[in-house]
Structures are given as structure tokens and as C-alpha cells.
Length: 257
View 1 (spheres, rainbow, N blue to C red):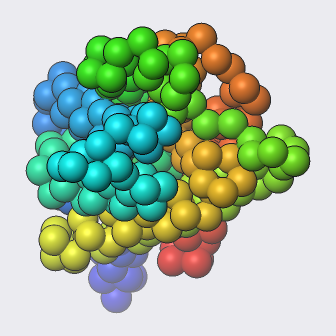
View 2: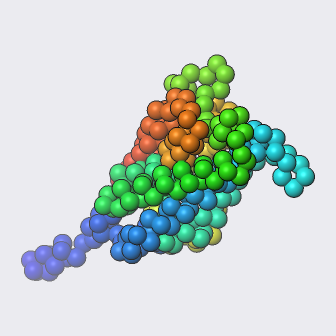
View 3: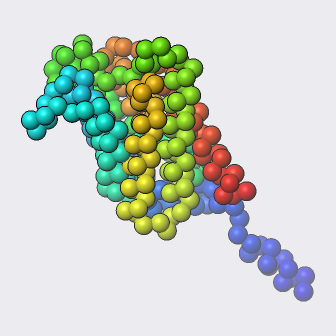
């Protein structure tokens, strides 16, 4: 009888973490090539950056697209659509984090291996810088001198503290949805992609009126570096990490107990 009890205890499942669960968001494998995953993150962050920065620059310069100028609502919409498309395309390869705040938050909540974090973050920053430079080339000198490559900054009369809170809450929303997707691995990939894209659009709608919407340290610092404009850069660097980490930790507490 005691032997049976011992076997039952040994067979009891252990708590899942990044070491024991070998797949991440959209079913991508942690055992797959890190080089391929990092390359997917670089390409994904590049595409997302071109979509967001390019659209924001077009809005600022009132540059026409298909005969008409974009409105300000185009930026959150293109951000959500682009992320949904990336989640569906490169998601199975890397998880399509395309955001250092997402990568770190998932690692903190033990849904992503820490050993992969440096390669992911480096790839994301390289992709983001490449996207800023390409948009600069697309739109010419005015993209940098007038539109400042869409670098966000606090709205008139809004202090850094309120922008920090808005950025943190916006990233909280995004990462909360992503953490749920990471936890429900049997969820249909199409539904997951749309949900994550919608979460980014909502995050932009929350933060944009107050601070221009960053929600992504790489996506903000890259155009700041290219434009040479560093308005309250520390807010856009730290707030997404804070909001994302809190979201992942809270979701883990709610689900894992």
C-alpha cells in the first residue's frame, strides 16, 4: 500500500514553467533554433516598426495615401492589424513577441526561458532601428526634422508621471492578453492572433492622447536614436516593463494560484 502511495506522489504533475513546458505562444518550440527565432523577432519588429512609424509620419506630414491623407486613428488601427498578421505568420517560429517588455514579462512569469531573452531583445532593437531608418529614407529629411520619426512625447500640459501611468496601463492590457494566450495553448491560432492585435490597438487608444503611445521600449528608443530626440525617454523605456511584468505576474497569480 505504501509503495502505491509513493508511486502516486511521484506521478503527480509538477507546476509548469519555462523549463518544463517546451512550447510558447502560438505553439513555437523552445527547443527550436534560437538563431531562427531571433531572426523572426528581428523581421517581425522591423515590419511592425515600418507599419507604425511610417503611418505616424504620414499622419504628421499629412502625406496622402491612395489619394487621401491618413487620420490619427490610422496609427492604432495599423498597429493592431500589423501585430495580428505577425502573430499569424512568424508566431509559430518565435512567438512574435516583437517587444522587449513582452519577452521580459513572459520570462518573469516563467512562460519563457531566460536563456533566450538576450537574443530576443537584441533582435527586437535591431529590427526597430532598421524600421526607423527605412521610414526616414521613405519620407526624406522631413520625416526626421518635422515628424521626428514619430517619437512619442508627453502631450501639452501632461507630466511624465501621468504618461508613465498611461504607458504602464496600456502595456498591462497588452501583456495580460498575451499571457492568457500563452497559457491556453490549445486556442485557435487565428483567434489568438486577432486577440493580440486588438489588445495592441486598445493599448494605443489608451496611451496615445497622453503620451503618443509607445508600449514598446524597442519601438520607441529606435526612432529616438535615429531622430536624435530623447523626450522623457526613461518613461517610455521603464513603464512598459513595469506594466507588462505586473500583468504577467497577476495573471500567473490568478491562474496558477
